[in-house]
Structures are given as structure tokens and as C-alpha cells.
Amino acid sequence: MSLRNDWKKDRITSAHRGENPLVLAKMRSGFAVMGDTQFLPGYCVLLPSVKVNSLNELDFKQRSEYLLDMSLIGDAIQAVCSPRRVNYSIYGNTDVYLHAHIFPRYEWEPEEKIPKPVWLYTEDHWFDRKYHFSVEQHGEMKETLSQKLNQIIKNTY
Image 1 (tube, rainbow, N blue to C red):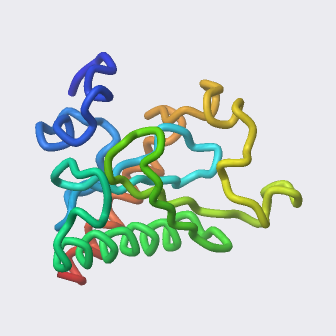
Image 2: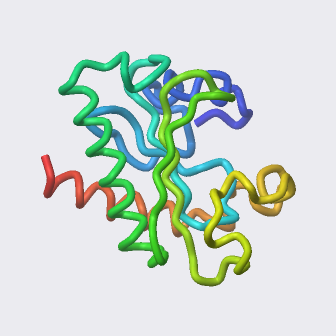
């Protein structure tokens, strides 16, 4: 595993090479990975196997697999993190390639944040190092999510 952050330059290729340290599982459509930030514990991303700009560039079978895989990640988050709900988002505005965000949402979030999208959290939540994924702080949760997701995958496909 790369000790530097070179893997971030191309997260999909680094996942294929086994160099992306955030990978939870290889799925039919791509790779389930932990989110870079964990202010909402269990936040994950689904990277596709091939780099495309949008969901619409995939054929119908690939789209179905991608959306199913996205929901399976949500199942694992539900089982491990017990959020009040899971939100699913596909944008591609900043990182211009297909990837899906899977966000757990919790009862303990500030009341004013609960009805709003996670993107309205302040910049410190996204960029403050205290929320960044680290093996020391989030490694056990990553391992548990990985085990649960692999079990779900085995039972699904």
C-alpha cells in the first residue's frame, strides 16, 4: 500500500492495483470505499470499475448493477452504524467522473442540519484533519463495514 497520497490522483486505477487504502470491497460494478472524511461515521463512496462521466454512459445492465451495489453499501452502513437513514447522491461536479456518495444520517446531528443535504455542513467538516479518515480512529469501523459488505455481496450475487 502506498505510504503517500499518490493513489488519490486516480482512485479507480489505484483500487484496481490494490493501492487504494480506503477500499472496503470489490463489487460487480466497482469498488466500495470509505469516504475521505468521517464527520458522519460510515460515509462511503462507490467508484465504478471503469471511468465514465455519468451513470448514463453505462448500458442498462451496468446501470442496474451500479445502483444495486450502491444500495448494498447502504445496507452495510445500516447494519454497522445504525443511522436513522442513508442518503444516496451522484453528482460529478467537482470530481468529473461517476461516483456515488452514500451518507449515513444520524439523530445526533444538529437539529438544523437534519432536514438539509450534507453538502451544507461547513467547510471545517470537509477539510479539518480531525474528521479525515484515519486507520487509528476509523480502522475498526472500516474492517467491520468491509466484513458486513462482503457478507451481503456473497448473499446477493
